[in-house]
Image (cartoon, rainbow, N blue to C red; front, side):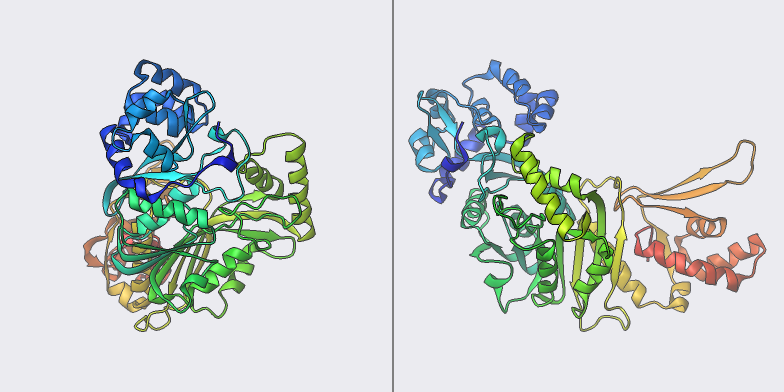
Length: 515
């Protein structure tokens, strides 16, 4: 095993030859999946290497199996096998490039993590090779404090949320291994990627070069310091939002700890976005926010937004109590149960207790700067909601849904009650309806609209609203449909319209109905 302190930074000079060798070996998502099989690949995702090792035995010495053994399993390989896996770069070149190192027994071990990453977004299907520091599975110990994290759940969540309308400029704040900057480069002409870690910037630059992406500029510095005075069309950030005690002996990992008390780093990223977005520009980030004994989390968030004139959409996906939150992030740093784990757990809970923190929320944040042509009364839009549980099916991510939701809210801001009643709407293509009946009854007791994509929302309808939605095919106006429904239900049309319009407005905002 290569201990964390001996892990290297890959060299930009080796990227062309490495790219050629990875292509020759077909080091990609599909080929690796076929090589390992579903069960071994799933086990590897759970940090269990034995099934993968067994699956690779019949292929020992083959370049693809060698690269998988080196970079995905973190196991040593014979020097002859490594030489065959790098026909262009050569084993000496792989060593000089910081990719592998020779062990005392003459075998070769990886000094970085390198793996293929496949994705689908609004632009289409894509695949890259992404380098990062070795994880605890390969290094066999706790992570170094300047550890550069590879692709994980948070990074794929943010890339899935990313809106992809073409823009001129984008900023990736706290780029880490560079994955968000690479995604932003698919829709932005120019990307600036910043980080406080020199190590992270070096690895991110390596990833950009390896994948032939030349539109990213890398800058060293904290938060918005490297882009003082600049504005961007799109800001994305997976900031180091983990709430860590500021106490002696508690590791502060650069990839996740922002060096501030509590959730201050998220507040600073949010408030700073107001000064770095062009009019109408959008910022998207992940974040944590604290629940205090005497303060509701969303009340604190409203204070963060005060004076910013930012359109804001906070979506809380889950909440963990203080003890559970501490356990999650202590394990994330590579510390397992034992005296050291207990010591860190005590430090975390002491910090939370002294500051009155009972639990921590996690979620998604979308911000938008006011536009000069924004409809009167449209700004600021403040939506703070909790949506815990499973989401709908999102093969290409949520970015398109978020963009459509913002456009729908703009449309609603420009349409008062009269204009909404005169508008024609259609039901979104991913929406289905469920009806539940008591046995033998003619009329349903429960009617539910379900969103297959987006955030997988469900909305319960009464008879009047269900009839209106069912008739929304783009031909008749909301007012005309309501009048017809009122006649069938034998109720006053004006009263029914007044009752339905606010709920129709909600269905448009949430993506069930579309103008």
